[in-house]
Length: 208
Image (cartoon, rainbow, N blue to C red; front, side, top):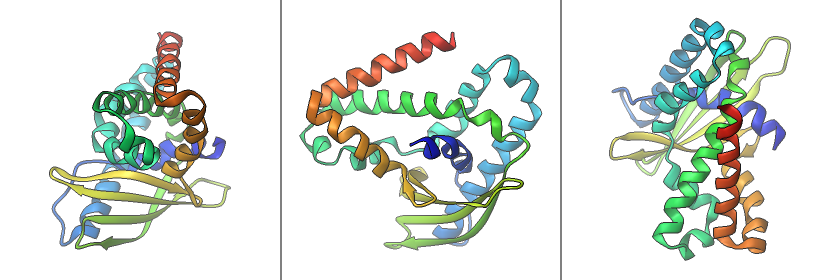
């Protein structure tokens, strides 16, 4: 979990609007490349402002990264059978609180990547006539081994969106599925959602 926390936001630098390319694999890879460049540039240009006002990072994440994550698909894969058993209201609440937790948890790590991170792209592979694309990349940090990162994207009506990130072989979706499963068994889905909501509320108060 700690390693996933440390590197996920660097990985999520790679999410942006779809560009018109020759094919689905190239289109998805361009999405990753463009947002990588844009977010790193913004971080470098606003490093002093971010240090004085960390809330700038939340705006950055909300405006650039969040719209390009498929939280619906991610939530379905994380909850699995519990998603199928959940009511529409429970699904909506889980997505809201999970998104809040993910944004708040990893935004705090984003500033450390300003100025010392590079992302190189290795290949992109599409499946099922371009519905799914995996973009293979590595995060390069000076003096440390490269970190392999695979982005899993799905084609939606408004373009490609990410539904999983695999960092050094560790899947974000599988990680949270493993973490949340025992909690749901112990306290129920509503209990998990309430726990996430409580932690999100505390995080908002701490950041105020």
